[in-house]
Image (cartoon, rainbow, N blue to C red; front, side):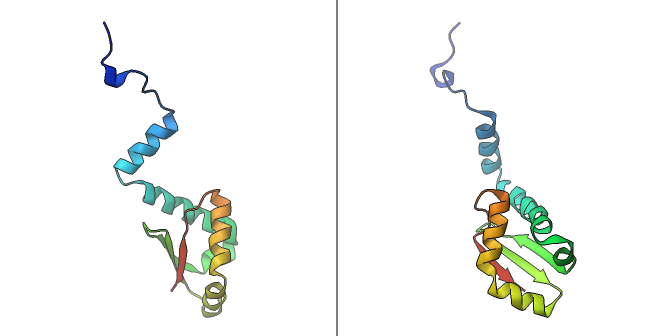
Length: 102
């Protein structure tokens, strides 16, 4: 019995199939957000993590950061490019495109 022509030679790596599944079900952005939140604590440490009220990654790659400390907000506002680079370097891919501090 022959296989239909549409199914011949259509093998793909499992990672490509999972990636396609995530895209079709619009789950990529949520997984990226979880990775960024975990990376935040690893990259910036426990002290900064405790002063962080809220982190949210939007679908366009904008990271919204709410901080408890005024001086820390001011410092992070001047270092947005550095924050993006540090997080993306840690994740080994470009996930964070912009940063907004609240």
